Length: 98
Image (cartoon, rainbow, N blue to C red; front, side, top):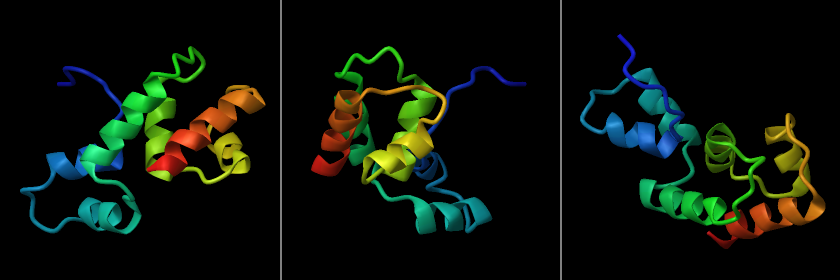
């Protein structure tokens, strides 16, 4: 039974599974998870401070998992919303600061 539905970053999944034996999902997280849970939370808070109503929780998780390096990366991740150049720049500034 599903009690709640919330998108999780790879860092959060890693924390949930830290006591598990070696599994394919842990191998995936080790290979592709770029952030620690603390860094991911810090970046998430800074992105939330932008108060951009276009960016939903799902988008935040995608940004944190992929850590875009340029505007093209942001457009690939957030293809379903239209961001202005200033909004893209603000996201990149936060992501690249970490």
